[in-house]
Amino acid sequence: MSSTARTVLPGANPVLALGSDEERRIESGYLRKSDGREKISALREEMQHTMEAGAGIYRVRASIAAAADKIADIQERYKAVSMEDHSRTFNTQLIAALELGFLLDVAETILQCALQREESRGAHQRTDFPARDDIKFLAHSLVSKGSNERPVVSYMPVTITRWPPGKRVYGEQSKDGGHDSH
Amino acid sequence: MADTIVIEVARYSPESDAEPRFQKYEVPLRGDWMVLDALNYIKDKLDGSLTYRWSCRMGICGSCGMVVNGYERLTCETLLAQFAPGPVRVEPLRHFPIARDLVIDMTDFLDKLTRVKPWIVRKDKTPPPREYIQTPEQLGAFKQYSNCINCMLCYSACPVYGIDPHFIGPAALALAERYNLDSRDQGADQRLDILSQHDGIWDCTVIGECSEVCPKEVDPSLAIQEFKLTATKEWFKSFLMPWGGK
Image (cartoon, rainbow over all chains, first blue to last red; front, side, top):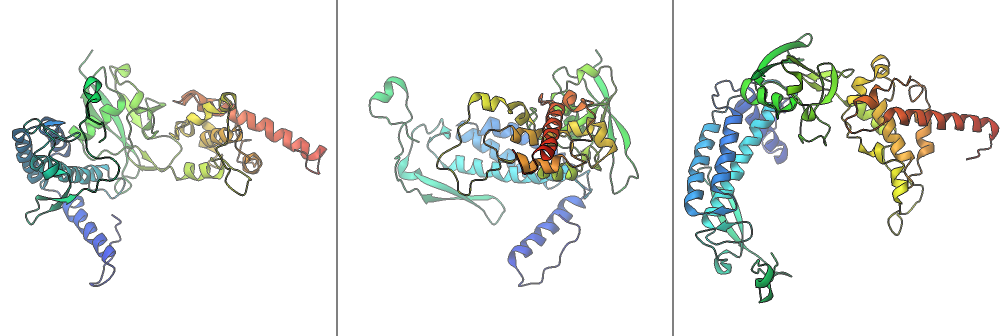
């Protein structure tokens, strides 16, 4: 974010090249932006309420799908985020704007993973799929950005070492078989 | 009670202002709001360009120290309604250069903090086979000093630091004492050299504002007086026992 932007020649250090790309993105997308109309705090609050309502611990296809639509809409509006602070000194609004952008990416990631994981496991409780499904979903969810900027979910197998997955049960139920382990 | 209150916030941009100015904002007067909530309201709803430091909102991080109606406060634990009907004046901490709006440049404090070696100094060459044992009494000897959260309210309140910026200042001295009194520490003699220099402890004239404004009930003023005593004893000893009796 320094004002002494370096010019990086093609073929030079790729990390520096990434850095100057990011510097350009921040300059044109935020610091010099003056046509925004969407307030950071309003978008942030809508995102928070959407995630709380649609993707809390208990989720169901309809709630997740509705939240995903809403977050996609907020993502779109975020492109017109309004920047009142154009200062190069201790610009906390720039930080808030960048944070919101990353939070929206994370929100989309959570929603797509939750939508596709049709089972319940740990803190992901799908009331429409209450059972754990090790055949399909004993897997790490990996998320990447697809061609349309939307997240694409893929899976990587889990290597079980010491603690196999088990039912989380308490009290009387725990005496017959369930082991509390994940 | 009116349902709004006016906040006068000190604004300063090094890019466009020659000196700080005040800007007025009208915010809801809510009984459960702290001054920091009012600043967050201004930033979120009224003027996104206002800049200030804050983080934890619960008196632990030490980021949101400001001068509220003339007194140094952590804004996250200063009730807004006590200032009704207002206005409430919010300014950056005194005696530091202003970076922008309510944000000060804390470089001088950080330099001074490092100079007093606020960490446990040991003379052993190798790490011990187990942890150092400390009794509750030994902990009690320094515990209050360890509550310092580096919020710098004491530097802003200290008239001596205001006159002589070389003065090491209250928080750094309290933290030096925190380690000097720690039974595990062996660095007191290294700290003595720094502390007994002219700009160390001797500038303090026991005004006590530092202890007064501390939000964590640390007593830097006491630490400084303890140091003066230690330093004086060491000075006499250097005459009585020049061969180095410790």
